Image (cartoon, rainbow, N blue to C red; front, side, top):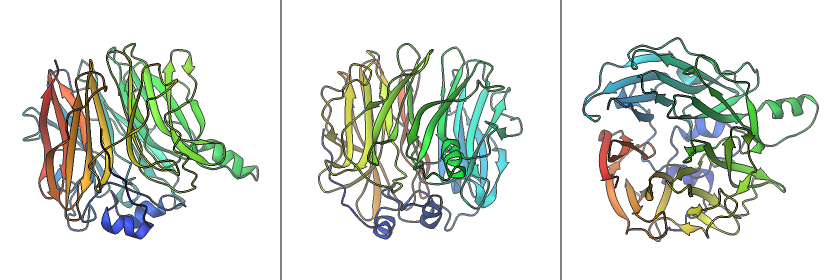
Amino acid sequence: MQINRLFKCSVLLCALLLGVLGAFGQAQAQMDHSSGMAGAMKTKPNDVCQGDGLQCANAATPFFGQNGKLLLAWTANGVVSVAQSTDLGKTFTPATKIAEHGKSLDTGSDARPQIVADKNGNAFLAYSFFKDSNWNAQINTARSEDGGATFTASASLVNDSSSQRFPSVLIKPDGNIFISWIDKRLVAAAKKGGEKRLGGSIAYSSSQDGGKTFQVERFANESSCECCRIGAALDPQNQPVIVYRAIFPGGIRDQASQVISSKGAETVRKVADDDWKTDACPHHGPSIAVSGTGKFHVAWYTQGSKRSGVFYANSSNQGLTYSKPSRIGAEASNVARPYLFASGQQIWLVWKEFDGKKSSVYMQDSADDGNTWSSSRVLASTEGYSDHPLLLSHGDAVFLSWLTRADGYQLINIGHKK
């Protein structure tokens, strides 16, 4: 694999050249740290578009139900909405508004609504919003029992007054829901005791009734970055596997993976020794896919002293050790937002590159569990604002999901499972 070196830049230069998903000022204010690399874009998401429809969305998350219906959840100008499509995203039903939070809605670079559905069409949605001027967030959830046509009123996921942000949701084949998020209750408790504590924690819970109730939340890791999304996937045993930016001793913010088994969170495993010592907020979380053999495939962004850029590595022993990181993307290109998808031993990897004028989504794929990869190729390009590229499947087809301001929402067939 190839990947270019991302230049190190100041906060303002990053925002001007590469763009920040979500307005730069807001992303900077969401944390008391500088914002690093983010998805390339030319304009802020809501500079011109003022509605709450898909055409004005800053982030859109898809999910295919087993009946082939596409559910799409998005956020636009403070409103969380869901719509359905039966023609692979060409047209959508009238949007169902889940909630309106105005400027309080979390639309930071790594924030997006989460949506899943079970085999009976019951849907579950999660998102976050800021509940005070100190950027403390709350995760709200809502449910649908009619295939996504209507939803319950949104309500808080947990009963805690600190801050919860960046929900990541998985649904198992049996319909059980797993959710993980960045939690700051330990930071809040330390502050009350006069102690300074960096970052946040990785918390998780699960539901066996479609999201009506959740088990008491638990911590997977008490020390993590507070502003980067969590990557999550199911392994062949349907155990959640998460990857995130942890805080290691000495203030090192490198990627870590964990298996969440029936017994709880297993050992924290470092993905790579990037040696990124920082108290900054990259707003640039990782991605993970687990193949049919159980191999972990991880892609991430770093500005460490040992490597800088966007990288890929894999593990054949549940994260105990990882392969040597490989750089993603073309030499001298601005690379961001990698995303992985796996089926059997087939792996797909997409990412964004910005050439100063337009953003393009590139792809590489592997037919042998990440041992060898195809040459990179461009899947789509756009000028102006664009969301992160996402991957999902329905039947034998694998799709790229990409929201753009100039070219609308795109669902592109990029390959088939073997």
